[in-house]
Image (cartoon, rainbow, N blue to C red; front, side, top):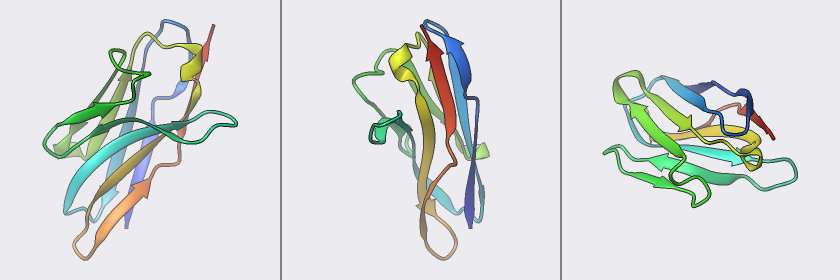
Length: 119
């Protein structure tokens, strides 16, 4: 069983910064990808950023140049540094981790952490 714990969300003014963290724990043999998604009220969940096991990253066009995803493999933790935040970044942010446990593959989601950016 693999669990994710997210932290770092909150309320911030436009132009400000937040850093989200996602810590994976449990019977983890290896982690392939770690990703952040977000879902605004009334909207579908969308991909924000991903980071592969080798460190390759991918970003949504809307966050390029403002957000940075990183990972600490030793801690099985992913981070999302969010700078120059805009009101349209307001959403619940979810972490997704894919990898292998000793017996099977896993694809798990965190509980979500809310981010609210005021204008």
